Image (cartoon, rainbow, N blue to C red; front, side):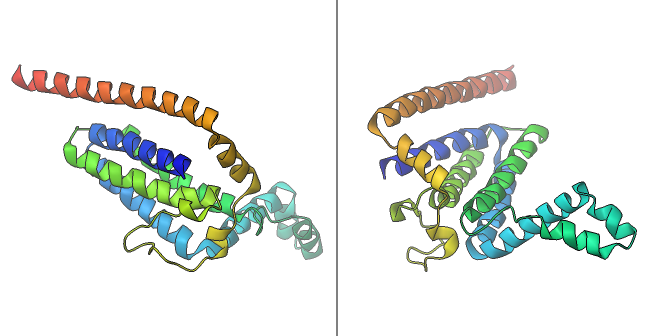
Length: 218
């Protein structure tokens, strides 16, 4: 539980600072993108898995010569190649597919941060804090089977919801990693590193604000 709270607070702090630096426009657009990904993961996990498996199958079919066989009309060869392709995501690791969707939304937001013009603002920090909360709420249930890791999200995820395959099953490797990080000695090290990182970000934020104010006065 402590590790979940630590991750939540850290994520909110990081994206709160980033939202302040990049401004409300970027923070709001990124939050919308993440919200769409969150809704898909919460309510259409099976569709996501099927879609990603379909894309993977198509790519592997092309790489293994299936496209050439299809062009030549050799459907038996296409069927043979297709039958040898195993799905990338199954019931045992479908949470990895859902994490891929979430992190793709985050990556898209970071790309927008790199290309959009930034203007520091407090409203950006507010949207950034909301972004960090939603991101934690989306990721925590996928990397931990602990019910305490399920964070409520108004309108999108009620406090009490039916336990589905997407929320109940966790990848064994990620779950083991989460357990290891939750050990006291590791928590202290991680918390120290995170604390230093947050302080540096805050100092850079204050410095950026001071420089902006000085330029306006000049």
